[in-house]
Image (cartoon, rainbow, N blue to C red; front, side):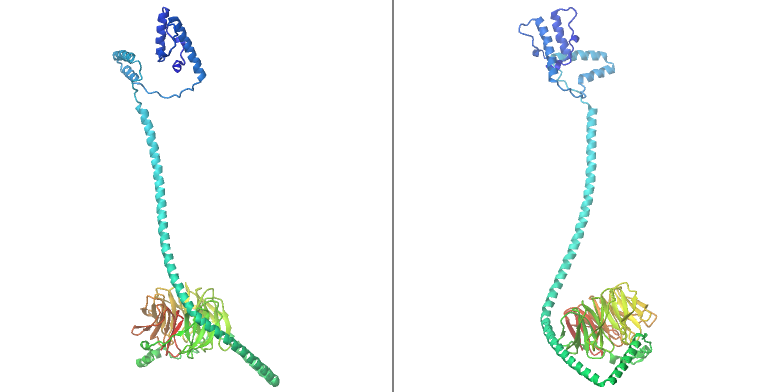
Length: 590
């Protein structure tokens, strides 16, 4: 009740015109009901019930209410838009339409109903549709904004998911590749462990041989010292005659050295083909050519292969004697005798695995190449390494002597071919032109032409005197591993990593490729050809030696090695074929 009387001005109360106390009290109650709805039962009229005292008490109670409201300091209510009541809406509507009689009738009936019911709280209010629409519109806009934000988040999540899915597929593929590589390496490791177990007995035997060799060396040193003392005694006895003889020998040596230094490239007349010209070759009767032909079908391997201490990378036959040299992965070369494989000579000096070897035409010097990027010359008479060529920038794959023995060619994975002067131990030239590793090199017999094969799938012919590329042969579909030329000089044979063997004849003006023979799918690691190019032997990575007849195009396969065959070559008289493999064996096919 106290809050309902706030802000009421007593002067505004209507007490009537006659000034009577009775009428004044009733008018006062009506005025209070008009200003604010007042619960009369809450007013305190005293105990005696007199009208005069009741009016005074009423005024006092109103003043008490004002004081109490000031003491409580009730905060001001917030201003809000009150909903429009139903009766106000109807009044405004009738007034707006000009329906005055209807408005008066509505006012009378409304007041009667209000007086009878005593309160207007039961009457409803007219809802404000426009305000509710605005509220709902704001909510819809907020929801739409949230939907757009969620759509953007969904697009970002989809992109991230696609990226993660691609990464998952990429890593899954690499995981599979790594698993395959691991399995392959595991197999290789098991194979190497098996080979290591095989090495141990051979290593023990070599240790014993080394000790016996050291004892022999000590005895030889003592004998040499004794002979040196005897020689000095004889020289002192001879006196001036021996001194004069030594001076003459020194003059001869100096003269010979000057000849070597100034030696030019040999002319074609000096290195004429001892087998005659090509016209003479084809003028021979067919029966005579057939007699020279090697019958590969009659090749048989020795009952027991020659066992070595390390996987062998290459083999080369001696140009005059029944022996051969091998280049092994342990960095040691060995000269073995035929047919039993008796060890004749051995040498070590390379710091890495060996890739190839070549005999000097005289047979007294051996050239070797290695993974340590060097080429070494070994003199059998001096029993030592007499020269080291170390100008290559990478692995040296192959070496070959010129037919005169004055020059040596080497090919490397640095894409170059170098020609060395054996007499002066100097580099005579560097041939550049291949786009990838140069895997093989050989001199064309009885000429100054040089043949090379490369991983860029080409075979090139060079003039070793000028260093110019004379011709490039195209036809291989993979890296070319080896190239050789027949002794007659008119047939060139090359093989590649697909197992293909191509025969070339560069004398004509047409297509130089005579034939292409697919012996795959395994890689062809090395190739050898007979005198006239009628029989070609191929070292295959499947552990077999394939013999190709160029005339008929037939192939004979010989099996026996347990691992890939790395090199093949004919003996100097073409009576036998030698093959070496990674299974540490040498087989002689007769």
